[in-house]
Image (tube, rainbow, N blue to C red; front, side, top):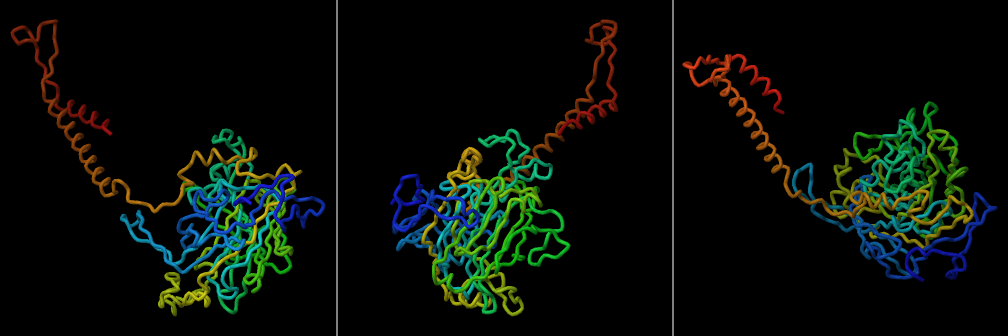
Amino acid sequence: PAAGMRRIREGDSLEPGVPRTTDSFRQPDRTFTLVAHDEFTQDGRTFAKGEDESWTAVEKPDDVNKGIAFYNASKDYVTTEDGMLTITVRANQTKWREWSWEKHRMHHRFKNYTSAMIQGWNKFCFTGGIFELRVKMPGVAYGGGMWPAAWLMGNLARATYDQSTAGVWPWSYDTCDKSARHTQQISACNGKPGYGLNPYQGRGAPEMDIFEVMPAPTDNDMPFMSNSLQVAPGIKQHRPRNGHPINSSQTWYDTMRIGEHGSMNYGFWGQLCNGLDFSVKYLQDALSVNSPLNSTHWEEFHTYRIEWKPGPGGYLEWYLDGQFMMGIDASTLTDKTGALIPEEPMYLILNIAMSPTWGMPQPCDMNACHACYNCYDCHNEECQCPLPKALKQCGSMPATMYVDYVRVFQDTEDPYQSVGCDPPSHPTAKFIAAHPERYQDWTPPQEPPLSLLFWGLIFALALAAVVALCVGAVKCRDRCGKQRAYRVLSGVDPSGAENGVTMITTSPIMESRKATETTRLVP
């Protein structure tokens, strides 16, 4: 079979063991048909830019959520072997030089860990249906330090590329109102949005986290999985505070459905986001549930699923091995903020992140450990104290996440479900093509062609020249004001007194006023 997400059409043959249909847990009376899948059966695949028809491995530092890893696109970190996709994180330091606007010079940067992130952005997208993948987690359940994730994002944003997400992530809103007109970049108030976008249609890039897994950072903790919908606009009044449980005086989405062993994720309720212009702010919400895991999720493969119905009567439901984890109905959102169950074409992201904010012992004892929040290098003896036990002395490195398959099933009779990144109902291609600077591949920022010091010198010289010209103009007018003016009387020739000419000298006071009035007009 060809590498990449294979599109399945009626009559196509399937590999042994690949089902043609699946049952929906929410809609058992509907048939969901396999429309695309990747079984990763071809070993040795590579995913650097242009090397795979469905996926791209990014090459960039992870600067999101205080990330401490660099994403490397080479086969050392992401490839296929033994019929599986492998994503590996290693305790290998990555160094590079880049320009610092803050320091106004080139400087060295580094990340102490190197990992991988693979995306289907602008290559393989789908809207609605059932998405399923079978995964074995990296590292160990009780040890912490890693942040494996599988998530979907709207194609108008390229995940972790900040310029593409500003003002777009994670909007899912199609109502024209004053509060969103200036904060939602593509607003339903705009009748002429251009770039092939539909008039009066609010657009964005919502995020659905199929799983974000935290191994237990200490023996007293429990490994868990977060299932989340990241969406904007957010609730504006009486919001719960991040890190604190909700109380009776606060407002949240009270019709969210939570699985038997799940609990509301009070660690993160959402945040204030920046638009393209940093003066523009808006709130986003994280509707999120945490559910406990156990060691088998690191030792064996388990099946993660999201059922997604966009449009009227829409919903989202998360499952683990067929067990219900979390659910959100359309009314859950519309009753609070007017947000929608996502209708955007969305793509898959798979990665292993690392961050001091996830899977590391919290709070870090800053009095006993001077490396807290400063150094998480497992090779450095002075940086062992803030690390979880499995990461000390790099004990859990390298670690690999194994993905057996990814599959998309859809209800082919549902007009809201489709495959593609540029559907007529929610186009993206022309908008992306018109803003290449927002989506371009990462390269280390280089020193500007002319440094700020040089521009400062040019500005100072230009200012001095302007001041000199102004002073010269005033002096010139003052000098000219002392010249004599002649008025011809009785029609005689002003060649001399003998011809009956009266010579009149203009008043110096009047000339001074004229010079002053003229000077005020000089910018």
